[in-house]
Length: 68
Image 1 (tube, rainbow, N blue to C red):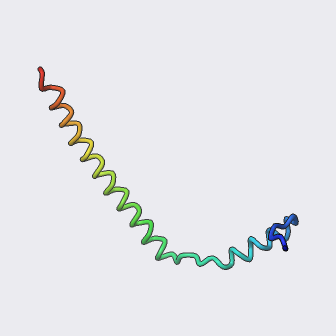
Image 2: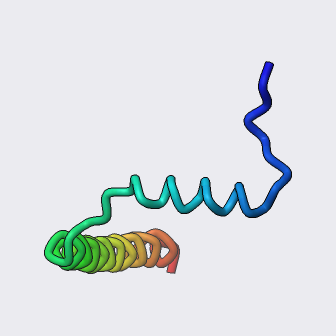
Image 3: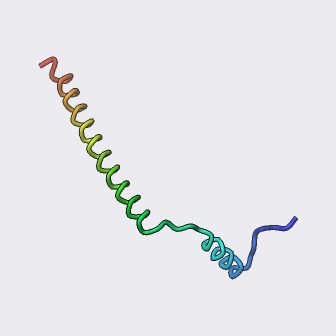
């Protein structure tokens, strides 16, 4: 059984280069669109969690002030 492991670093680097050539890199347009989508989703998540935090803070405040 042949081992796929190699001890020669030059052979390893050549294999890495060969595999890197097979990668399909996204276009500039795809990268920009994906980046914008990530930023929009992060902003929406921030707004959602801020609103949820405010609602929970009001509820906790109402619960804790009941006995006053």
